[in-house]
Image (cartoon, rainbow over all chains, first blue to last red; front, top):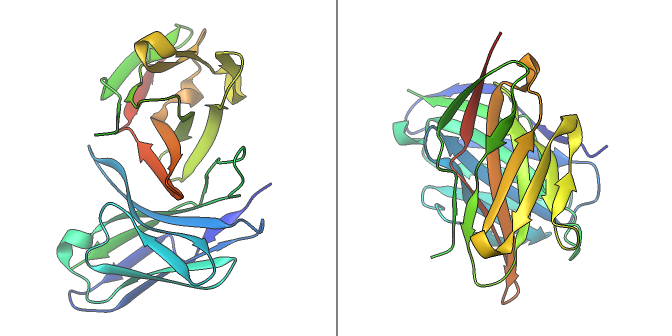
Length: 114
Length: 115
């Protein structure tokens, strides 16, 4: 089974702090994704990566950055956390082949910014 | 604009009753289609997917979905709901265009099951 793990289930941070959310997948997937999930808005794509050191902006990249130094690890960085970044953050990975574009999700990190 | 619509925000059914969750998408061609389920406090789990071929696809936990091109729909069904099916359900589409990927999720339907 594909396993996607996220470094924390719950985080509480203060406004202005730098926040790192880490995601690791163990299936040698090419693609990795970061979403945020808010009630009534569904999942919105923040960033994705289709290869090591490659990244693409999603629909809501403002206030976030990402890092992918190794294939299995994709980090989401909040450079200066703000209260409107309080949300559930979901990481996902997918194989990257044309007929295997299923995403596999981690359990999520619920972030509270005070 | 490309979009995925789940018109029902909440649905309540009695245990043992049948279920249908609606999903409509807007694209020029047939995308890859998915249904995911999210239990409280958890990530998303794939229920089923449609890429091509038979328009009726079977998934896990007794779910099925039917792709109808003429209606741009991919509705999820289950003949008899169990209390453990209470969760949030997301429809999603995937397109690969111009060398980039595009996943779009619906806003979700929250299912409540009455005992």
